[in-house]
Length: 97
Image (cartoon, rainbow, N blue to C red; front, side, top):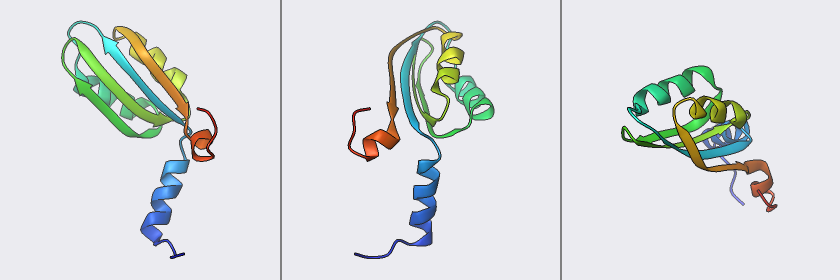
């Protein structure tokens, strides 16, 4: 088995900081993906943030330890649905989400 590089170790450590993979859709009017992305990145600790969509539908993907805060914020922007919150630590151990 080969040894991991420092870069690979740093990446694993960063990944392990955040427990929940949080995904959802926001449906609304006049949605601004840049505004939503900026708000999430400035107000919630996490990584792997992805915010894509248009004025009526936005997809969010975010790794965080407090998904309920992200969900509460997103609910202020429109109707949220297709919400998925998965425990990545359990997944890594081969257990159910």
